[in-house]
Length: 190
Ligand SMILES: Nc1ncnc2c1ncn2[C@@H]1O[C@H](COP(=O)(O)OP(=O)(O)O)[C@@H](O)[C@H]1O
Ligand SMILES: [Mg+2]
Image (cartoon, rainbow, N blue to C red):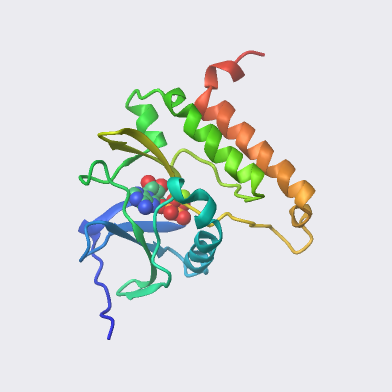
């Protein structure tokens, strides 16, 4: 029988607007995500992972296939991205604050965004907290750690139900992210 995982504040790594991310209490290679408001985000994320894994393997964490029970509710369990098997890797936001040059990651961002475009993987949530830069002896590896925006539309009548418009929105979001966070100087001119 599966035990209920016990999560405590001291296991908390980081949090986004929707979820809190904890270290797994029994496995240093995994993390556990809890929805702040139970709204099905974790289930959607797991299903998105299943769909995109064959294409994006290098750029995403490994996931457990099913949600698990914890003292804080149902949770998603996935690989904890760590630097050389040590501490959790930092987000792109932290990397930039610490003086890292995100342009060093341009080849990886380009490949990642091209994979999305070529395979109609319509993700819309590109922000510097959702990208993690893993530092390893081999170099820096980009990871996209939040898959819940795949195919997300606001209403049943959203234009993005039609692939042409979904592609336009994906491209807009990629451009906006790139201009803001990878090449900010180029956008500051009038
Ligand atoms: N697999 C992971 N390994 C390491 N850190 C992670 C991982 N997944 C998420 N995080 C950290 O936890 C934060 C919140 O997770 P995220 O899934 O983005 O939550 P939300 O759905 O609220 O945006 C991320 O911004 C990131 O810094
Ligand atoms: Mg996020």
